[in-house]
Length: 592
Image (cartoon, rainbow, N blue to C red; front, side, top):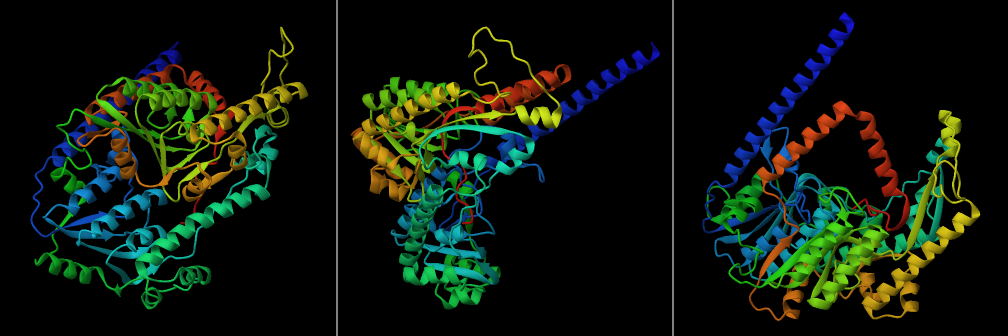
């Protein structure tokens, strides 16, 4: 009895201490958010001859996270407000016409967190800024290929005398787990349509198939060729020379970059500060960051806020699922609901959907496609593709009036596959788990992960995959005004770059998000309009309290049912990663 009482009291004490610590944690976070919010409203003074500073090492996401915890730097307990790509592009456009902005200073930092498709949009905005006659200066201790791609547009490109300069081309590294699955006794059951569908290769092969290698080489050549071409134009260096420098690692030291014409001068940071100060006609350079400038140019990118007419900018970002967290992925029914509301809103005259998705669930993709089609039949619908809009991401895009893509966007991947993981051997030999099945009908346990597919089941699944592929091709053919044969010829699961997409008809134009919005306004015959983004996110306080409640619920659930939580998470993982998918291998390109 005494042991029971001791254990009971110990449990109560643990719950009490855990609850107190949880409450203290949230109290601290509330004060951090309040302090960060107040600091964001501190008055920023914009004086004449100010230089706009852009940190190229900072992330420029398509949309910011709705979770306030993502904006807290826990090492300093300060708010780190994110700037979106649209914010950055709009602020640069605003600065172009702002008499107080003298020029732009690009600080390249030591790394890049922004995909090359977004860097393209940033570079285009900077090039447009230069057309006004204002200058752009770039400086770095280390130039990555990504940061140099942007910096090369500058009037002057500077590098630390002891810094580094990376210029060696693009690469893609595929990781294969077939050997791991073999050791675990897990046998993937794959049914697919499309010889280029590389998403399933890591499960069944130990190296790239010939088809996958072909498409990867072709994509990389297209993307790298575009980067080289733009640098060649800005720096007036022949593309052949730039390719030679990359192939021979000719730029080993900063002096090499200077000698070969990729940078203008080698300077230390204090020497750069002196030059910036001279440009401002001050003792110290007068700089303003994008975040600070946003507080004094809050209407940038919003259009005419007095207008009742709106162009809606809807973000579709992440893998496509039937259910889950809409802040981290695209949920079919939830995005469809957003589209439906915009279609019925009489003040919304046109819609631009920014797609950044490798695809996912066929069902969820089809639910979204249907609302896209209804939207296109009601008002102008324009697609702006980001880093990738492939497979399911292309499925939901194909009904649009016009599709824009970056030169380096990964798109296409019009193919379908089904995956079932047979764990019978691994469960029996590694864990000693066996099963015995009782059925009311022969197919009652179809899809059971504890046995292999029968020939009949495999044939049925193949029929389903073939049917889904044919429908996918038919939808693309209808949306793109092509024949079935024309689409089938460029489909088969093959991934294309944005430039290649324009050549084969999957994409209408190479262009930026700004171009897509201008196209939408033009098709809606709008001369005065405001831009409104969707889905709407909660304010910091509302989101914080929602997170608190969610955290509290998870804590309570953990105390009373850890086993049930594990079972639920496992079931969700299996459900999301098995079945018929229209999905491209994600994070394909690395080494840039």
